[in-house]
Image (cartoon, rainbow over all chains, first blue to last red; front, side, top):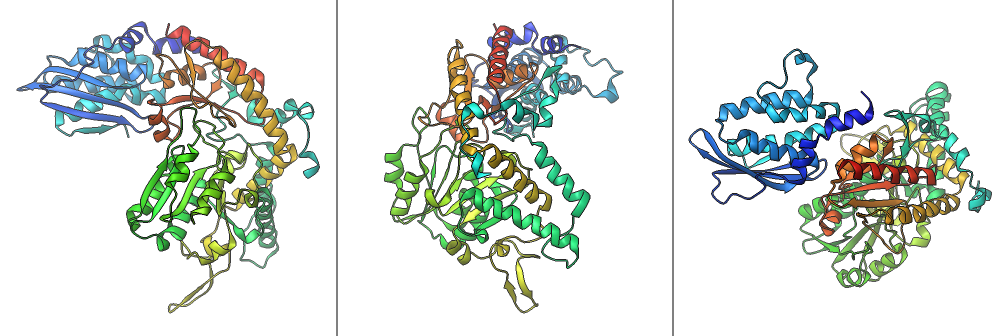
Length: 154
Length: 415
């Protein structure tokens, strides 16, 4: 792959769009849980808010400062997980994580079944130093759901 | 060597300098490497690489111990590197030079060995707001241990330390004042002599973090007047894992050892240990022998080019780069101090520094992005981070042109 192609794979239109106009970018006063995520390497911060009704994630939103990859990842994550059960969210995160880390041992598996629009992040696997940007919002969501309050990429 | 110190810019042969750095022949993503990240760590000239190889191939041995020839040779080489550090810093005596792993270890050494026995609750440590984490955290640890209080002198919008505040914050309670010679995040060159004189007038001891200064400005600790001066080998074209602390002999003498082990003792029994003389008292264990010898070679290399000539070359690049970047719409230079060295820190409107760094990398241009281990500086400007292009003796105007072209690509991607 040429450098320009790799870059375009990383910075897809969907990702650029979500980074410039993040969805669900708001605080949530009625949240049942929240967590602050930090990437100590770059100082990026994300706060994820969740509202659970039983086992279902009724609403999810985020605030924070980050690069285009982490902002878009947070934005698209909130769209992907809204209305899903904890188990479904967990499965999505696993699939997402497998895709962005490009785990060669599992290359035979289709990395993106059910990932839908999240498949836009497949290009991140070519940029090892950017994997944490994409996964920070997910780690933070997981912490919010677990009632842990804090998450870090380290 | 000193004869070349005064070489004028016209005589500065940057093409020849570039040939001294083998890594500059490498390519990144199919593009020639444009290395603008020397403030993070400088590349190594052939002379440094050869000095380390020569040691390992011809005369490697432990030092200060053996009676055999290799040990004598290795000891001579290591101690002659100490003499070069002494000359490089303008120290009075070679026993005032303590080898450390780098600036960070040197500052920790002073905090723990000088500060910890001396500081009492209510005493104060004064820093500037420009500091790298390595000149903040060791003092915070010291304050937690002793009950002393940390004070911080602010910087203005340009990135200069506010000298009025510096003076105001100094008092008889101030036991030590610590600040950088050159800021790694912004490139500000601090008025070290003035800040030191003010601190001394208040009765404080002064430590200067010279990590970012050593490759760019000639250093004379006696003229600066400071009590401690720390720098790292890897930023001045030497190996990583080696650096040095200069300390005034009288202060080093009264400091207890901060680590115990071999080499730092005169005699050991289970009842009592007598410590070695300076500087060995503060150098426990087998040191980074190849690192020390490599650092000596690096200082020879820098002296060969002449620090004044390097500074003149880099000043030209700094002016050229400042002008070129200032002309880029949506680009803001962060850090516009009256006197700067080696650093062009910037942000692009609406584009995160990490994205800038990734796209520049694909143009072969290596810059640092993020908070540069100086989060309080970033907080001062309300930024999560910046992109930082930093200069070295081998950089050219063409390198800066490549940077500007790369920034155009970044903006195109995020249009």
